[in-house]
Image 1 (cartoon, rainbow, N blue to C red):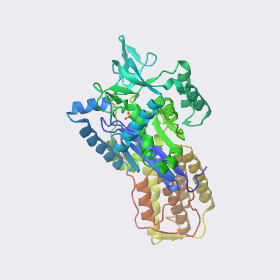
Image 2 (image 1 turned 30 degrees about the vertical axis):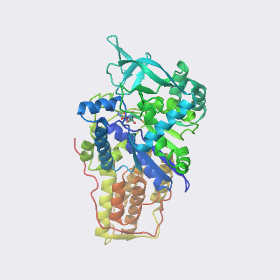
Image 3 (image 1 turned 90 degrees about the vertical axis):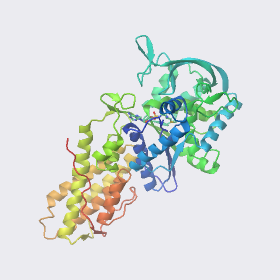
Image 4 (image 1 turned 45 degrees about the vertical axis):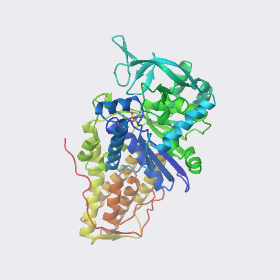
Length: 504
Ligand code: MSP
């Protein structure tokens, strides 16, 4: 299914806690969303890609305290660090949203007031076990008991007992609604994650959730407009960023156009917030649900989810220098991307993807073809017709690639391009253009395959595709419409060595 002209595609990542620098786990989500955004832009959709930072709450308040800074100075500094990382990885976001942005604060104030006016927010007392790293309460069926004490199942740190006044959101009123949408609507993808939430809903009664903290405990947050002694709970604040990013309250027309096409990319750790709580909040505001919630699994290192608390993070900059450039890292992250399964990232796995696919399969082909065109065909090739076997393979690849990209299967889409390049490598070895007296047609066929591959890879490896287009003299085409016919002229200005192999 290929998008028609004029369609809108709004894609978001979670907004990250900027208490520390981003690591490969954050890059995993951000690169995937970027590949989808770039793909949709290329096929002509009006695309808006939103990412940013989740800057309020106790976790950030404490991180700033530890750093000896005012939280606003701290998050200002950290947001710049995030932006720097995303520049390093060529992330093409359209807006970097911060929950301290004025338009967002207004959305939060509006949303909580609106729900209060509708009788969906009420004052009460709360007690429970809290994890500051997750910014979340855990109940007895969720936390771990270690030496008689409750521990966070994600961070494996002792939970903190909290007993305080609060405001509740009447989540319990939305139980039938949630049951219905999770059962009957095709929003959560892959589907088994919807069943996971449904099971949780059915296991026990849905309880109301606390959506405010007393200011004396958490002062760093959006003030509750109808009771200035409280700040809005950080998750309630953060989820609303998706509305702010689409222009809610600031640009009604844009909001109505963008919102129904919202695609939220999230890790499976924040599934409950993005389905149960978020869907109920939207319903409470009489707003439509997002089009899709795309849930992916974790990258793990040494058996544990990669994260700061597990102390097993892989640094983005280390991989950028190991794999030549941002494109090496973007390609590897795309290839290991998995919606269903956790992926262990070992150096040997990453090296082997890089060496065999980028350095050998793509890199060698390009180098050989470009060198041969310069040596044997005075730097130019053209031909009226194409070798049918390669033409058929290219057409099939384009079709398969578009299908896979529309079903979020970015890894398989990249592999389809690699298959085409393998076929081209087999072809060059068979026809041996370096020995032929008139190799122009064979080289032309190979240049065409490189053009197709460069166009299909452009959302994944944008710099490399750009470099290929200037080295061989073609333009990158819309991947749903790549033209694979005779009659083009390729003028080779450079025979690039795209990716140098790494050794263990
Ligand atoms: N601030 C909240 C999200 C609010 S969204 C309204 C939050 N932030 S976070 O900094 O902890 O980032 C969470 C997201 O980062 C995960 O959902 C996931 O997308 C990504 N990842 C962080 N570590 C990861 C792995 N080890 N593996 C894969 N993704 C990971 O939660």
